[in-house]
Length: 183
Image (cartoon, rainbow, N blue to C red; front, side, top):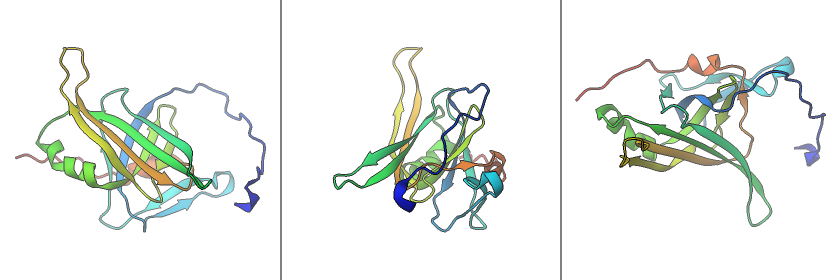
């Protein structure tokens, strides 16, 4: 990082509406051999393609509306070293055979997440080291209006801010087709 000095002005070039919240969550089984190609021209900081092993896929998570969020936080260790903590949260409402089949993998696996916010920005979290579940808990709720479902939290330590994808189309091309497993 060439002396950790700014190299350009930080301006507000975008003039338009911005909506908070997460629109889509995609998980990819973490593979340190995956190749991320960055764009050219003024898109040199955005990922243009993701190349994974031939049989690897991305998986879309259908979460309960308005329960997904993410963060990319700066952290400092005791020796003065700095790193980033990427965190993804979402709730899933189904408690069925299909979810139970994936529950152990979701609980114990390591993932790269692509989060698309409601303004259309797609951010890659856990690209270098992966994210692991730090919580995977079910709550039934007691009253009719209580929240129910699985609360999932994934976190990981990274050495970069979550890079942007050029568009959601980059990940959509890698998503596995819907498959339903029945007992």
